[in-house]
Amino acid sequence: MEISQSRVLVTGGGKGIGNFIANGLLQKAARVIIVDQDEQLINDLAEHENLVKYHCDVTDFSAVERLVEQIFEKDGGVNVCINNAGIIHSEPLVNLLSRQEKKHSITNWQRVIDVNLNAVFYVTSNVAEKMILKKQKGLVINISSIAAQGNAGQSAYAASKAAVEALTKTWSKELGMFKIRCACIAPGFFDTPSTQQSLSENMLSKWQKLVPVARLGKMEELLSAVEFIIENEYFNGKVLALDGGLSI
Ligand SMILES: NC(=O)c1ccc[n+]([C@@H]2O[C@H](COP(=O)([O-])OP(=O)(O)OC[C@H]3O[C@@H](n4cnc5c(N)ncnc54)[C@H](O)[C@@H]3O)[C@@H](O)[C@H]2O)c1
Image (tube, rainbow, N blue to C red; front, top):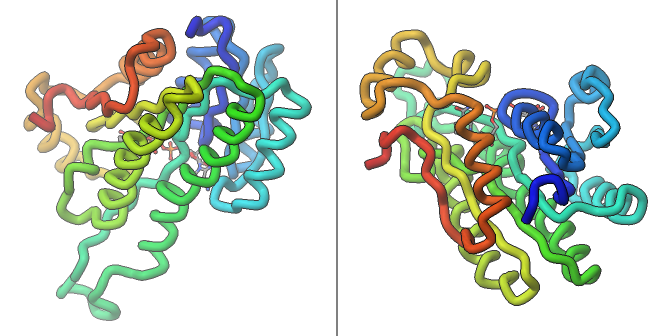
């Protein structure tokens, strides 16, 4: 698929990785639809003739259903759907040092699964239905994480991302006959504001030393992975591990 011919939906495109990908694709003449739950972020995004932006919480199934209906009826639809919205959450299964509840919070578990997994299902089921009904070629790109391999202290996050990788494989098998591909990118540690916020300087430098190429990933490298998947129509059902070799 040519990038200049693609119409791309990016969830969580208000900031961070999603925003970087959206802007990179806009520069290559794609039409981009950014969806984010943060209304302020959406309002602050610079206008662009090829950009449409929506405020929507993708964990709300009815809202997603209405949004996708609108995108296909009013905005010409999308042929690439990037499920990027996500929250990074670290919490041990049991914390004996905690003075209150020592077990992992159920509320936190449900929230992470809601955003990182359920929303991917909500968005993709609605988008794929429209693509199939309109008999158009399509692509779904899910953003997972190296944590899908299992990461101590990240039960909910790791489980949500491992499930997203399973969905990627399942959907590629199910949707291939409709000419819809599904692929996944599993980033390691990237130089993003969210990484800086969620890890202490000590932890960051510890992780960097463990990466064979001894540095954090750059957002440009993530964008180039997205571009590769859009353009290479034989890439399907696979997880592209983009982690500097950390998962070897
Ligand atoms: N930053 C990294 O190094 C890294 C590494 C591996 C995987 N990832 C994954 O990449 C994705 C993006 O991460 P990021 O670092 O850019 O995060 P971020 O926090 O900077 O941005 C996430 C965006 O998603 C939006 N969002 C969150 N919940 C939403 C919801 N319910 N509905 C709509 N929008 C919602 C937020 O408002 C925000 O704009 C996530 O899925 C994350 O798990 C990031």
